[in-house]
Length: 460
Image (cartoon, rainbow, N blue to C red; front, top):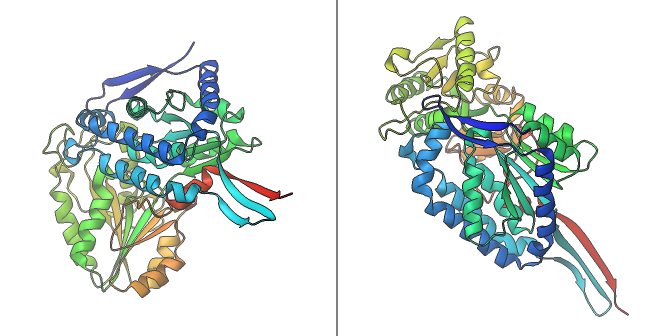
């Protein structure tokens, strides 16, 4: 008997959507259909595959008026922010624009004696396991280049955003992508692990928790399945003495609080040069005190609930532990009476924090951030690197030589200067340490989603 997957809405705790999970045998049939269709899909010209993917992207955009409130119900993002279509389209469009060049054969020699080249062949059937926090943008990071490269794709979304995969599949099918080539599937953890362990896929992309990434790698052990992971993060910002303080505080606090702090590359800890510490903190408090916590369907709401009450419980636990250990919370919870002890949680800024506190070490993934005073670059670098994660780091200075020198010493996947919380599709999206391994977007994504095949032909 198959189980039922339920999305519990953070808006009011109701069951917003539910779908039956596929049994292992039913899921295996979906994989077999994808495998059978993949060869014909790969035989189509790259330009044709790219055009169909972009048509599917446009079809998703045509649904945006329905998608925005649907996302609010599923994961709590306020409707005032308009959904994810801008980034969704930007990423797919860029990957389509470079596809023919990046997937073209690498010709070593074409002479009267030899034909030598390296071709890029699709991996085969790709599984994309997408998270709930940015369910469209994180999915398209792999779905678009995987399909363009000639793979078939099964998309499994987090239960919290149960309807997103359905919408994407419906849009792509309406645009002409074959149903067998791109499938949205509803799978529980056991069936997902069983399929991976059975060698159902040649490539798995997973975005989620560290524990989830370990589960994926354990399932794939011995199968030689490529597994790409983007896991936890604790991304730092460093504000130097020569920074534009107004721009730094506005951008970093938005990076910490937007989407209720539920951003893969959101800012979770901030280090400010002692010269500007008090000014930075005062400005940060003023910004956060101006937020409006409430129902995400209300266009005046700027801070919605977290996606699930258990996520909010972890944020509350980290804040409470830090305060018990001597940290000071600068935001009066009474300013946010909508905080119900459940998914709706007041934002918080903490000072007098140390790296002995979980709020400065563990992933928080919520609207709370610790701010520390530093004396200079060496102290800031040591603190930024004092972390098990490494996704992005944000540096604030007009001196690009200094930014490059500091960036070279940081253990992270991406170094920003004077910005944060952005994914540039032309640059490789990657991490280090417990953030995981693998590459997304950029020209390097096509290398991950294909396998090289060499031709060494001696002409008679």
